[in-house]
Length: 365
Image 1: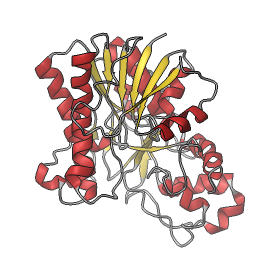
Image 2 (image 1 turned 60 degrees about the horizontal axis):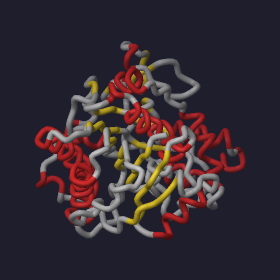
Image 3 (image 1 turned 30 degrees about the vertical axis):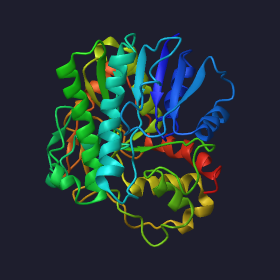
């Protein structure tokens, strides 16, 4: 049994991580901002006692020394999985509300481990878009037709651009935080290794005890709106056309901690292309009673659509209606490292929608 510290344990992605860890027999301590959040997670996993699932209160990750106590344990930690970082645009101050929590939270956990937790062997620090495709993509160059994004790429966002608007601030927060982690590793030469998990849009089942219709993660809100008849006139634009299931993101975190060959690497964790039109098609199939309230226009792929795949290493599972394809007029992606090193077999869009709908219904969608 491995003792694991998980930060930000009540988040959409983070709460799937203890599920993956606990089912494999690991012991988890997760940081939360309040005892109320801790109790909600206990209620989500009632089969596990304090010896397997425990909590540490960290009220503000941007405070100096915020994690100093959390990283210390009578049963020493071997892994740390750091997911605590803001992902919302409801802000008044980009620096205070987005940049500082992401950057200081990341460097703070690394400093705390180095100072107080010498037994830690590996740190998995996801910069989640729950980002981290936000730390890879170059939005100013979009759609960047024909270019293949991979772990080698970095978002070139500047500090001046970061404070222009919340979306730019969010992407910058992920980029700056991840760069700070790698710079820490290079400069400090700590006794632990670092890996990062970089997913794009993250969809998938929620834990109803931890989310409401109003606090639903940004990606899943589009499915909620379809189920509630809010896409009756037109399906909204898809935005970024690559995605991943939250359960696969959780597995990626765990395997990056488990596998020595993952040390010191970034992982671009994506299942492939998707569109809101395809999500709408799946919602109609699963919920015939709301089919008439979902538009049949909008939400398509960009001009050029999908063409036959020319590079097998870039295979993606778009939907049950397509064979292996890539998108003409849009960037390509290379997720081969994630498949080869972490052994991830990505879930399909169809299965994601099918499994997510009942969890959204459970909170009133």
